[in-house]
Amino acid sequence: MIRNRIPELMDDPSLDRDAHAHALRTLNRVNRILGVDRRLDQCMRQLSGSASVSVLDLGTGGGGFLGYLSEKRLNNSNHALVGIDKSRVALELAQRWYGKTIRWLPADAREIPLDDDSIDIVTCSLFLHHFGEEDAVLVLREAARVARLGIVIDDLSRSAPAFVVTWLGTRILSRSHVFHVDGPRSVRAAFRQDELAHLARRAGLDGARVQKRFPFRLLVVWKKPETRSA
Image (cartoon, rainbow, N blue to C red):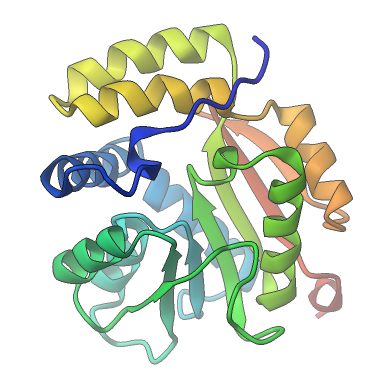
């Protein structure tokens, strides 16, 4: 399957707010059902050796992963949770659903408004496929710049079986028209394992591991060189 980036409905700023909210809630719920949030959390723990780290979530959308971390920490951690998204509507919804203890920033992931090494771990889920190759490399470089320990990324893996399963799954799991449209479009826009590994190398993420995970997902884990011998 050739990569084909078709604009997703959730990227349209004129999208009806209720439809946007429905799609984001569905995406948060599906990530919980499929264990994506748990997998990201486990990878961060392995990378950092601790459950208490500061986390930046790029393209946070409805904030589901940060909400998951906040619930697990039960407000017992002083380490920051930060979500970045270009959509102010998404950030307003995320704040309403998961509270004000998480910092929500309207910003472009290609120009993260944070200092070098200012966040322990940078994550993103179902986000990188929204970009062309050059911009995806910029996002990865920015993530590496602000991360003190490393990066953990979860995204789709492009294939014909993934497209078919996603088309069916979105219709089984939700009544959201936006979810029905954007799910299959996301698969067509996604990278394959070799493509994502190539982008990671171009971004300077030497030693990054790109692994296939259920269901039709790719997991990228990169540890910052300065911390590898620590």
